[in-house]
Amino acid sequence: PFYLYMSHYAIHTPYNPDSRFTSNYMQADGRGVYDEQLQANLNKQEINHAALIEGMDESLGKIMDYLEARPEVAKNTILLFMSDNGGQAVSVRQGRANYDQSYPARAGKGSAYEGGIHEPMMVYWPGVTQGGTENPNRVGIEDFFPTILEMAGAKDYKCSQTVDGKSFVDVLRNPQLRRERSKQFMDMVEIVGIDNMNQLVMILEKICDYAEASDSFVPVSHECGIPERGI
Image (cartoon, rainbow, N blue to C red):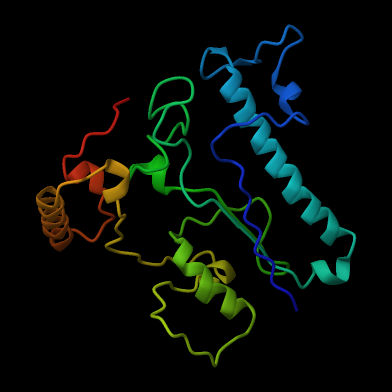
């Protein structure tokens, strides 16, 4: 048995050009291809951004190709893919801030809006998951540890730290199940640039007040009145 944790640097700033793929997003005259959503030609930063995505996709494809060439390994291998955060960063690349980069979700990385907390995730588990299907259950990165242990059949184990996550093997095996995940919080302190302890205390008090009245996700930057760039 083996475990491979592959963490790509891409896609991340700085958006340096990947010469293998940048030409796929450029016209013959050197301008970026036309984007229907932006209603404009892609600028240099968007061209580089798209090329970085394609480069990561090719890297993942090579892993898939390796497994396909070894069917005996592939049938006993589980693949999990997940981003570590939402789309755009705090600064806008091209188009309308907090709107175009993660459309139709609002905002992106560093925000408690949908664009910042809703990441792409895929699971390939031969004999369990079905291609072309979706699972609406809510999971987080902290759920990966107990999930991988259960997938591997590990039962009698001890951890020096508290395991915050919950295995989602059950909802993979039975997509009809619905799991409850209440009172989920994000640490927005560093992102929003809070440098005043009194301000932080007031924010945390508001979070606690809101949590007592709600079982839903607490959008910290919204409920506490911390402004974000509007649509």
